[in-house]
Amino acid sequence: MEGLGLVVGKKAPDFELWSHLSRPVRLYEALKAGPTLLVFYPGDFTPVCTKQLCNYRDNLAEFAKFGLQILGVSKNSVAQHVEFAEKYGFPFPLLSDPGSQVARAFGCTTFLMLGRPSRAVFILNRQGMVLYRYVEPTSLTRRGAEELVKVCGDLKQHGLLE
Image (cartoon, one colour):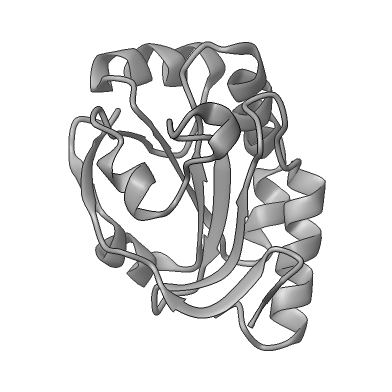
């Protein structure tokens, strides 16, 4: 079922990437802790990415109502993620995808980005099923926390966010 950003029933590809916390994070292991908001973003310290991740940080309590954890993914190095997370106080892991292979596996590329990974958000349930997918057409747009919290509410209401 696809439409309005919903992609119910497609299994997310598993991956393992290093986090800014100096340890690997494997997606399917992380999902055991609960549903996940997987956030692909173009780069640390860029204006739109910073606003986006700060918006999610500031709305953690709203995401927590759904048991949702957040994982950020970009091509930046672990060292740069450490600086970024420390400067802005991100309490969620930032994962390093230097070759953008994971972003490509999730289909986070757009024509307007000339095939490079774009900003994208995915909501996954504990079983690794993609419940929501939105790939931004340009790097200047982003989904706000309020919109994603509403999506989570809709998914929960339909018994999908578990």
